[in-house]
Image 1 (cartoon, rainbow, N blue to C red):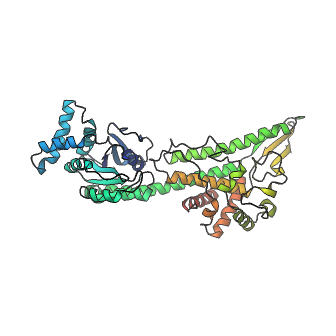
Image 2: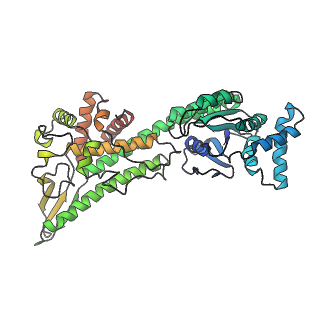
Length: 467
């Protein structure tokens, strides 16, 4: 390897459109890597670093795909006098092509140059298509470079031909792994790095240190993300909107505006939380299905969707009782159906307020006397336990999306229709009650230590099975 290399460098190479850029994006945690289904999107070698606290741990080189490997191989075979000269022959080929200005082998030159400069090789193939001898020219060229190399089988469509590829690749590569950059969790990423550490001894210490740093880094990110959620949940539950009512003004004319302002603010707080999480986890370009609030991405205030994010009826009743909640503020357990917020529970609501308040109790709209300014109409803070768990469920689901999403995944994210009950059931019963009591206090504001407790429970819920 080149003496000038101070950290591991890997060239990600292979046939066009086999997921090379997706692998680079996932392993460097960068949305900046261009990914497209169109063959030939990458036309020149580009470097991407994995940085932790401003220090580069390793570099991946995203390269164009092989275009004419058999012609390159033919040239090399004609110019290599013996096996000892194979690497020199590859170098001679690259020098000749650059000197001639011939663009016929542009892509091959681009992908071979970083390897000749000292990069290790990560060769990528598609495990959903059959193995073909046409790939042998590519693998032979890489073998001739003499650089440490591993092969990754990317099951783009399926794993139908993975075993076939493993049998063929093992003849050219010391390490062969199956790696799906769209779904690979942190542990699978660590496995790939560790495999290269085994392959090339001089980089072992660097890579092993990087893996340990990454573990600590991801754990820190998880805690920070959960704390962002805790802070925003407190903001939502403690928020109060108010409008001063001038003397002799008809209050009912301001109620609609108050409800609109209150709803808009809570939506804004939730959107702010999502944006902060996207920035924290380096997904600034992630698109959310947020425009059609009443369809694919249910409205926070559309009660018909609340059961999808909150707790089921039995869990609400049990936790409310255990936490000492008033029976009248829970739910009518005798009503039919399985959805929350239906039937007798809506009795006595102010007309049109069902889309605003979880409890929608008349006392949530308060008229307080204000000297010289008539009265003040107020909405909030939110105290209803059912709504509280809706907010929690949605926030936990979004955090899970961010935690599990790789940087190769460029699909539009949608909030899943999961049920918080299954997550809650993975907490010990005593912790379920403690969490409930803490959430019931959130409308008054939480201390720093209470926010930390809420953070820890949020992280437990997020990392527990959701179904």
